[in-house]
Image 1 (spheres, one colour):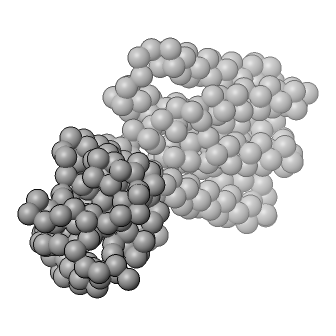
Image 2 (cartoon, one colour):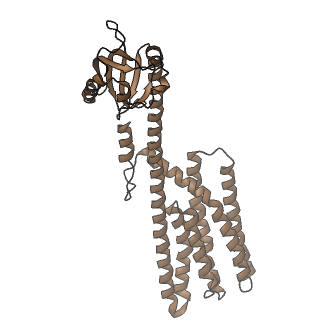
Image 3 (cartoon, rainbow, N blue to C red):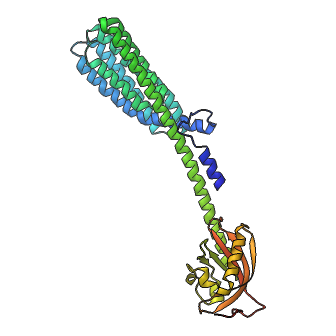
Amino acid sequence: MITELKSAVTTAPSRRARLKNLSRVESVKLKVERSALLFRGAPTAIVISIVNAVITVIVAAPSVDRGVLLPWVGAVLLLAAIRAGVWLRVRFSRTSGRAMSRFARLHVLFMALNGALWGALAPIFAVYGMLNHAFLPFVVAGMAAAAVISAGASWRAVLAFNVPLLAPLAATYALASGENGLAISAVVILFGGGTAYLALSVQKMIDRSILLHTHNTQLFDAIQKQADEAHIAEQRFRALVEATHDVTIIFSPEGRVTYASPSVETVFDAAPELFIGKTTKEIVHADDISQFRAVGEKSLSKLGEAVQLDHVCMKGGDGEYKALAGRLTNMLYVPGVEGFVFNGGLLKEEPHQHLHAVP
């Protein structure tokens, strides 16, 4: 168990995990999880694009020729409908890792096309004298931020949208916005660089989260496996013990009884439950306690190896002592046992009472 837990812990990524030299399983896991996150964020991106397109039409209708504005908004809505159709098809079909990967590739393409359509808004506004309208930078910045929110799992997807969105805007400001055009263009470029860095940081954070979740799952599985094995081992141990006529008593490291086999009732005339919680001083005769503890100390250095105990007297339910012989085994590190196990029976060649003088 310790080896498996160490393996799971030491392979977990650190805070500065560099997401390099990943195993094939980890690489596939990352791609599938990223694709799944893109899939979940796609409806948000589609709705934002539709809502902003409607708002843009309302704002630009008084100034922009309908022959230009309507084809633009029609293209945006058509692309949104296609994206929604693809999303629904995947949503109601049998989803697999390969299907998610195909959707992710299509989603990046759709993001690029959508970015180009929204990027075309800048020259349209410039032609109709709306380049300095406050609505243009507002809607463009909103769409760029929405791309980071909805597609942050893939830096590539964010770039696919923001580059064709912001490049025409920067170029249009530089060429058609007078003496402040270059400054505004520089601000747009800086904004684009900032969103790109933010998208990269978000993807790295998501990747680390996915890897941490993967390794935590492996760690949990290792613990669960060992717990199941310990439970099975405990059941097997109890079944073997309860099937024998020998007395089996388990003492905790503190010297308290944690288990007594059913056979103690035959030997001691006392229910096994009466032994639970009692100490060695309460069970083992005073004349034998030092010898019993000495054997226990000897067993500490012999994990799993039985140490012979030729004679020990233990008190029964009627208050009388019974003379037994057996073995004391150190099973402190055995799951389901975790104590010193005494296993033995009544001495046959001697009377069943204590041989020494009872003080």
